[in-house]
Image (cartoon, rainbow, N blue to C red; front, side):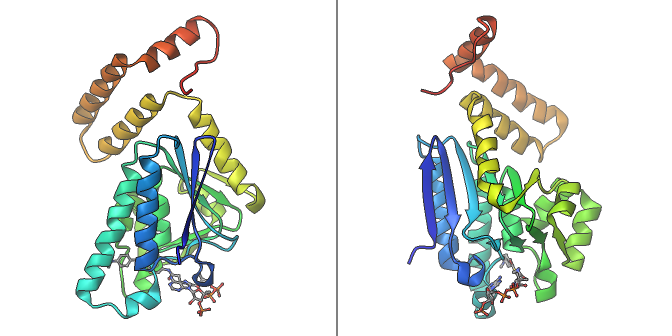
Amino acid sequence: MSHIKIKNENLISEVIIDRQEALNAMNPDVLSELTDAVQKVISDEKTGVIIITGEGNKAFIAGADIKAMQQMNAEEALRYGKAGQKLTLMIESSSKPVIAAINGFALGGGCELAMACHMRVVSENASFGQPEVKLGLLPGWGGTQRLPKIVGVGKAVELITTGKIINAEEAYRIGLANKICSSNQLMNESKNLATEILKNGPRAISSSLRCIKDGLTMNIEKGMEIEVEEFSELFRYEERMEGLTAFIEKRDPKFRQ
Ligand code: DAK
């Protein structure tokens, strides 16, 4: 049975993890299905923004599947770890913005998946944490790498070494959440953000995402080299002419058909 649903409307694709009996924890099957679904929406022409969420109002994703991991040997753990890393890298490198709509627990691998997304809109009952050390593990889907970049080294070390869980307000305060809203407004708020993005030039958005992502792993000179290349590349496309002309003609640009 598939645990992943995809909905598409108005250029927004929702990818929904539905394994509520285990708080949407990701076993190897869920991970594989989610990877296929994300790949599909990234290459879908009718998708401009992707929203990833968990079904129900209790959990986004409560982590990698603890029961499945208890049965794994080192080789299986390596495959599972690499599969999770492949998915988070795919999300992070997406040419289309990916929003995590976080409706409850985002723990362990769930928090790591949320951090691979470009933005995080969270409900008041959301909670975050990297409790892997409590299980004798470490955050293996990029958590040790992405958390310090999002919240700073000190906070990341504190969260990872204590394994403590923080609430939505604390997540917002440290920059892990972009916005907090009530549970019943979560999808509306996530879609509002997506709609605001969709008004803008799709190529300009993809180029910006690439510059931001690549810039995080290089020095300022190299990062700015990439930025100026992407900037000049945009002049090859009709999109920038539409944007510049619309400003001069005092009208809204029309970037998408
Ligand atoms: N895995 C499997 N099942 C889970 C689960 C999980 N992560 N989280 C919850 N469940 C299941 C529970 O076992 C329970 O199932 P039944 O007992 O009813 O069969 C059901 O979901 C409902 O959970 P609770 O009864 O516990 O619900 P509560 O509201 O009382 O508590 C909770 C909610 C989220 C506080 C609690 O369920 C909990 O602490 N869950 C575990 C959270 C957690 O520790 N998550 C991190 C998992 S470790 C690696 C790469 C990545 C990773 C590791 C290695 N490599 C490179 C190899 C990542 C690791 C993780 O994510």
